[in-house]
Amino acid sequence: MNTKDTMNTTKTKNGCLRGIVWAVLLAVLIMVGLFLGWNLFWDCAFTLHKASADKLTLERVYFVLSKYRETQGRWPETIDEAWLPDLSMPYGVDAIFHRPWLYYPNAKPGTKEVLAAVPDVVRMHWLPFIGWQDAVLADGTFVDFRSKGINLQRSITTPRTAAESQARRIHYLDQLIAAEPHSWRTWNEKFKCLRSIHRDDEVLVAYKAAAEAMPEWWKPRLALAMFGDEASRSHGKISFAAWVREHPAFIHWCYLSRLYRETAQDAEALDALRQAVKYPLESVDVDECWVPQAFAFDAATFACRQKQYDLVLEITEIWSKPRGVYNYFNDNIYAFRAAAELAQGRFAAAKADAGKATRSLGARNIDALQRAAATENRSFRYDADPKNEFTNYLPFQD
Image (cartoon, rainbow, N blue to C red; front, side, top):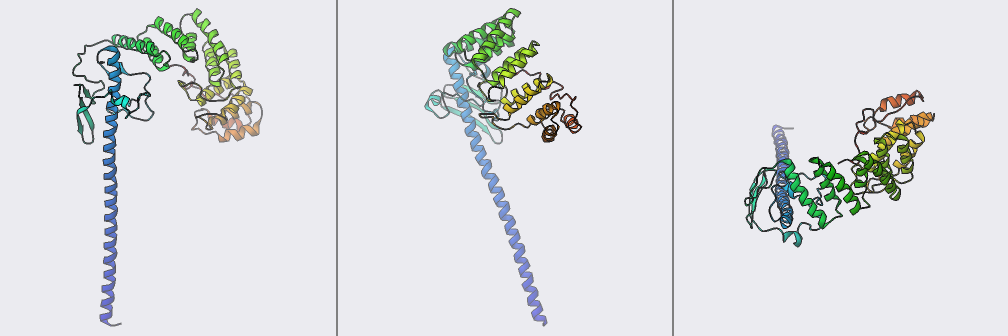
């Protein structure tokens, strides 16, 4: 090959290399451009969505204020005073500048019912990366998103004690209850307010009134068995036991079992659980403080401590076949099965179930349980909650 051919070959190679370099650079630039464009697009979309969300929040907050003013003839001093118990706050939705994401079931956002109660927004102050700061409505209302309370320019506020604020709140709740006596959320809010300012006698009166207004509701009847003097608690316990027999369900029998446990009536508590396992594990009340699996965990823990291993296995059998929304298998079952099987001398089954239990479960003492199963130690007494981290919580306290 002569020198000329060599030079041509070298030029060709160099040209190819330059082409490859330029192609790589172009590809990198395209990728960077796409990345930046994509992020810019979503940043803009998020900003627009945030603005829309804040506008909806403003509408919902003002809806609450308007309803309060209709009944009280004045503006509330804070959003807490005007909050409607029948409003729900979806799980996982953050407050917007300390504003609750309010949703009124009878007046959904965008409907005429809501918009008729919301005047036109004259001005809304917005800052990049921060969001809405404040807004002025057509009727002169000034809404400040930066503070926890709502600052109404035309209202004259005076300092109040916590008791005075709660008393105003209770007065408003009484009006809501008079208009809608079957709202359990409103009753619940009244219970909390009365307890917070230690008006204990009035709380008992409210429980009795709620039980009469809503005979299908479990909470006021159970509360009457938990609080008050000895005579009222004794009568309340008998009344609640009769109510559970009329409204049988796994969770309702668990409530009665816990009630007996609070007064050291362990035999009665176990009998209640023996009735509970006759019914499926499912959610039955809209205001349950625990998911159904938590009731099963609590019941199995108590039965295991009482060395009622046949009952433990009955609970785990019901627990393994949940119904409704919470219809998933709970791995805590393995620990309780293994403990009962070990105590009954069913070593092969105990080893198999203990091997499926892991330390990530809510049940504690898994390592000790696995060692006892491996050594076939029937004298081992399993406790899933040795520090009472779970057991100390009542499933019916607010």
